[in-house]
Image 1 (cartoon, rainbow, N blue to C red):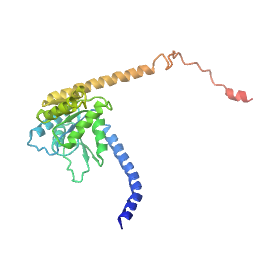
Image 2: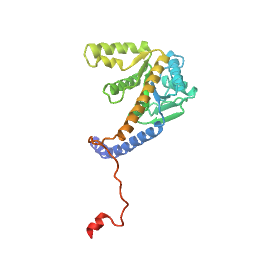
Image 3: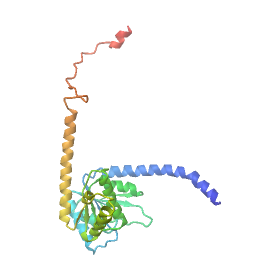
Image 4: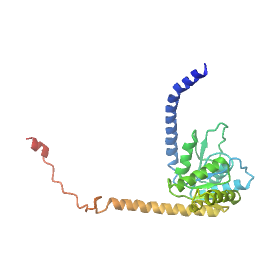
Length: 268
């Protein structure tokens, strides 16, 4: 088979494969929504898979997972090793909900054993939706490209108001502060690519208790606000005024139905 024949064959088979891929994507979203809709208050925790159990950031992530679970939050991670394992472990051993959203990779990912809720994803973008949609906060420990991807995606969604603002905690000041300095100099001061208030969209800290307090306080506020909005919506539905501004009034009293309808009378 020459190159032209191979190209023609790919062009012919491509649309069929792409059509079926749409259904695989849909099924992954449906399964993810069904599973994660049971998660009322989750916190997505990100960080390097290469951190080992004898390193400080592993201990911090484990303590974070434990503290979140003790305060009633579900811990959501990518289900792998390193920081993900540590956060899942802390939540799991504290008796909390420990969620692992695992991913198919060319190099097989070993799912950590500290998950009591888990799902395997083929597509990164489906998985990323679950991290955002079902989380009340993001916690980012030191990590590589994947961690940066999740952090900056959260910044983009919040900055553009595509999602309501939620707490984004960057754990490990020694790791994150140089990045913040770079953002302040090159993105803000030198080029004006971001606004001064954009640097307030996240918090850098080394304090586990402080981070969880921020998450808990914000969640309490959001729950209260949601209740107020629901009550306002119910009140609006029972408003004495119509949409055009006139009074609603009382529903007319309908007389008992006659044997024949008015239309039947007209026909006669």
